[in-house]
Amino acid sequence: MKRSTEPTPNGTSSRSAALAVGATTLLASSLFRQVLGLVTLIVTARLLTPTDFGIAAYFLVATAFLEMMQRQISNVLIRLDDVTHEHLETVFTFQVILGVTAGLLFYASRPFVEFIGLPELVPLTPLLCVLSLIIAIKSPRFVLYERNLRFSFAAGEETLSRIIYSAIAISLAWYWGNFWAIVVANFCALTTRCVWTFGFAPMVPKLSLARWHDCFSFSIWSTGALVAQFFSRNMPQLIVGATLGLADAGVFRLGNRLSTLVTTQLFAPLQRVLYPGLADISRNTNRQDETFNRLNELLLAIVLPVSVGMALVANHVVIVVLGPQWLAAAQVIWVLAPLKALETLQENVQSASYVEGSTRILLIRNTFLLVVVCLFMWVGVDYGFTGALAGAGAGSAAAIVTTLFLAKRYGKRTLVGPLTVAWRSFASTVVMIAAVLFVGSAYGSTEVIGWAYESFDDLPLLRIRFIVKVLVGAAAYVGTHLLLWQLSKRPDGVESAVFRLAGKMRRHVFH
Image (cartoon, rainbow, N blue to C red; front, side, top):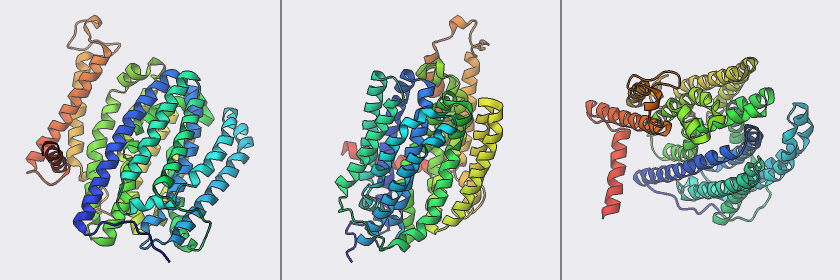
């Protein structure tokens, strides 16, 4: 049987270099996509209503679920020691089974959607049936690039689909002025992904289950774990729409989207590096724990200040950027943004569990979390939108606690080990909070004038206050981080990694 002939990096140094380049490539493309996504969100929020966002939220959750399932099926190719053409054909067959099954379920769900009081979603079901097949028939060979630590193709896929989505969503939102703009844009972006994978990793589709046991034995537990995790994350959105109405669902969607834009969404593409990278390190070295710790330190050093900073200026962000009609979304950011920052640890723990093969433990943990989140939301919605938001926050906190218990198996092998590796980031974030609150007290609020001004007429424009807070917070965080690094005698951490990267970039530019 013919094996894949994709080139693989040889040696520890080349693997580390490939992993670093892959992480940098995906992170850079992710930053571009998140900026573009933020622009798209701002424009569409000004053109569409909360109800439009609520309807689109259900469609986007459904397509995200389909993408996750397809990705999970193909991920088995990363873990296998040897990949043959029979493995590729088996994975493709599983994807087709997924697509056909999902399409039938969406078609049959129309009476249920009307029964739960969401008839606005019924016109979306035919499109979801078609998308089920389009998402399912992506080329399994495309994953081999990631297996071999070549991530530029994945970065290209993500970036092109985001550009197409943004261009179509903005254009149609301006022209149509309803939720179909987001739906059609998402459909086109997902179709582009499918075409891209076959363009760069062509294969002749063939249905076969010859290697079903190799693929199924790993996938059954990991897929169950991922499904439970997906619904534990999205259940608050689904429950808010079903109980409080599509308008509240739209507000929750926007606030949650802004929170995740700088946390879990920003680092979601790095999951495509974490799992292949940890799998490769596990196969060839004994540095899994060291790598686990360094990844946690890097993640928290970036997401903590950005997410907490987002919460500190949430009112300014919503009023200045989105408009006063979305002001209720600010409270969603206050609650969820800091919690989502710590939830990013789940990606690293999940990847380490996959490499170790501990997928059954992941399934138990995620199923327990799903039950807890449903319980919190069931109690919370009785108290309206604020109660639902409290329930979502409690569910997020439960996810963090259970993640820390799972993380005891890796890295420092202590409950708070994933947090203590980033102690300088936590300390710097506290200083940043104090600095921004000090500036805020000088300006005051809409009801009370600050100590630095005599009347409301003296206050600078809201956008100026917003910029000042952002600059002060950034300077406080970076300055404190570097000071603590110096006082700690410059350990090899995220600061030294940044300086090394800056040095390489400078040499590349000037030589």
